[in-house]
Image (tube, rainbow, N blue to C red; front, side):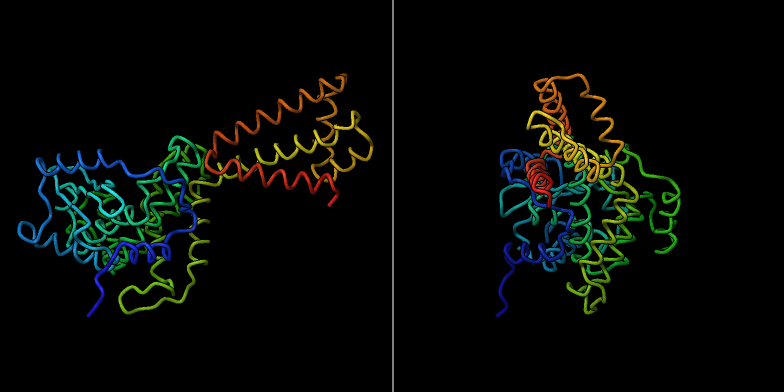
Length: 358
């Protein structure tokens, strides 16, 4: 007798397909009261997907749960009347979730495409995305949010077991067009990225919560080639490690590169100011100290430092450098609140190596 699916099975599978950039953050728990309120509201204003009332939609729900190894009874799915192309997942508790899908989205998609959408939303539940506490307004929070979408798109693909249905659903959502107006052509659709490739990503691009659907489509195409998680009866030939590296490269090229460079520059500044403070702890700035700093940071940066502290006494130099360290640390914390402590620890290790001449 086959063992019934359990959420532990689903979560073990999810850890295999989770995108590496989707780093689990501190869990703050589920908003049970909020989810129960949503459930009550949907029960009175929407239609619950069930075998009795919506057999075709229930089949899509059942298929998604089966392939993701989720007990179907743990997912409460509803359809509400709205022309918007929307789907949402709410955390009821650690074992159950509530999904709301708009009628506009249902009317646009085929059964397999609906399975992809349901799988995408269940993915948020399996990976506990809705239980994580993160500063959405921070750059780090937004980068994590975009990474989460890569992970749950993979859940959607596993749920429907069809790259074609997954990409077709993506094309319909991005355009709002039904089948009669779309010719399925993966290469031409994904080649839209070439237009974006002619333009450099800006810091403004990093303020989005979701990667572009075209970029996500290419990430799905690559994931379908993986050699670790079966899609249907076909095994791919590419490692997930390599696929994840390609996805990271795409995210950097079109969205994340400017902000990653900004973060690196801030970390380099913090390293410079901290090493400078270490070099002046003896109360004087020796020739040997200057040579060490120049070897690490370049002659121009050291000249600017010397010009800035020229005429200051020992206490003033210390106050100046402490202020620079404080300002830079605060800026790093503002951008990367979840990982700032780890980043500062890594910088401190580099400073120790610098001090020891390693």
